[in-house]
Length: 133
Image (cartoon, rainbow, N blue to C red; front, side, top):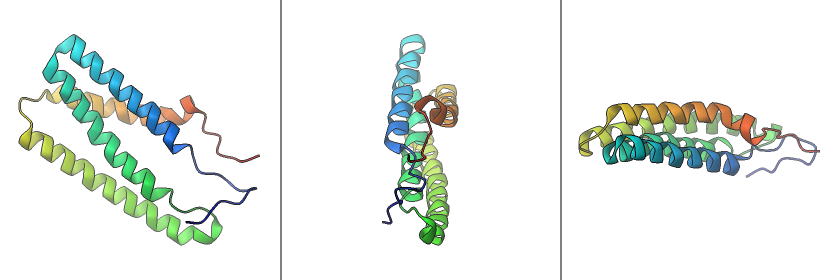
């Protein structure tokens, strides 16, 4: 793994972003559990996990390398991470719809969408300053 130079651009705070998204998943799942029942609660949890696990895989793949000398490795890792993320999402939805019954489809998809929006907003909430001083 190539390290970023002290004057370069640092990696984004992935662990902090992942923690924020995980907390949001817990809150969304608890809200569905309390207001719509047990099936909605675990359906929401599954919908969030279908987003969070592939997103974690992408982050691990995409941010393995840094620095200008690793540009080809960085691009390759991004493409591999994105392809893996899409495949893992498809597998997650397939597993849930095939083997988990009963399922609240609206809670599943709504929580997946909430996690997607949370992912877009997390850099703003966590402070996305990756420049090193």
